[in-house]
Image (tube, rainbow, N blue to C red; front, top):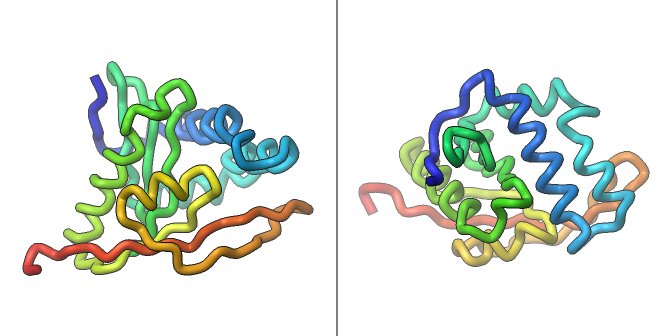
Length: 160
């Protein structure tokens, strides 16, 4: 059974593993081997940045039998910064459930438009949730170029 819960400090190493696994298992569908290896190493190469993002943001964890299998981070309040699912748990609606949870929290914080920087892989997930493409851009990380999609979704506030 999958349950969403708050992030705990003891989850950090699990989230690093989820991030790495998600990119390694699913990344080949849209990226070169070099891009996948670089992207998957982010939580380790930039450990302080990853930890700060997870700890500073509003991070929710999806657990299966109390073991973390996915997570999402809202940071800042109007930006879904991270959304990763272990490869073995992909395709089960987990990303959508985490998005819903993050969107509800953003509304609670008064956000009316939630943004994200989607990968080639996550763009369809966001489109299914009603996010609109704002811009496609090429970014350079290390010596590698990546395509990402700036997307936004209008959110309904409780008074709407």
